[in-house]
Image (tube, rainbow, N blue to C red; front, side, top):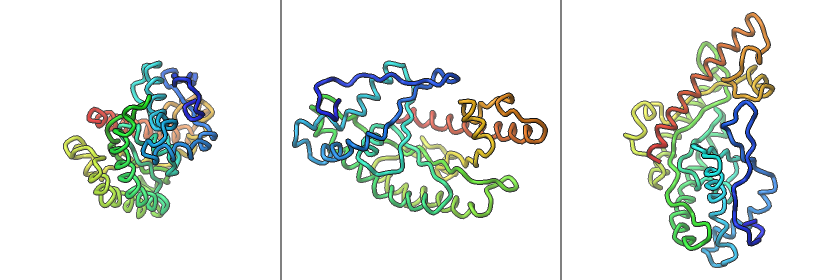
Length: 271
């Protein structure tokens, strides 16, 4: 309604909860959102010159806030597509912290280089916009999202480590993130302090985890409607060496995601 100019206040939406995860609330996106990107772009670049658009920049934040209140949600995860649209800018700047997901390939390396210049520019816009839109019905939340680390995923394992074709890319991703990328977002005020990160995360060059390909567990998880680390033996529906191998992978992923969750929750105390 905010994007259609209709005088109805934003209200919380009814979220879907998977049958096997009733404490998870899903607020689905929609392809039609792209239709409103031009309006949001204009609203965010017009310096509040048009009163009819002044409520758009804060609309997503308000929708999330009301939905969080409705369901007593502790943590909201915003899964963005890889574009640099006004919608993604707005949702990104609504967050308290952010994670950079990567694959060990040249495209992720190029994307990091792009984000190095884009994220500080977004941050500068928000510093100005918070005051500009302070009198709108849905003011922008103050503050900037902080870099919580990266995830490197979707690679094969050989002899307990990433297969050779992926290793150089993994190394380059880590070097890029802890080097020029970190320097750029640090200057923009989008990082935690070294004490808040802790020595382990700094030593890992801000990599929260290296998560290999899910392989055979992924279709089992999709069919069961659960994450890969919650697939049961019955869900796997295999026997012998195949069952043993998939159980081992399940244990590995459970360990990965527990560790990732603990690191993120620890950082969010300072966000």
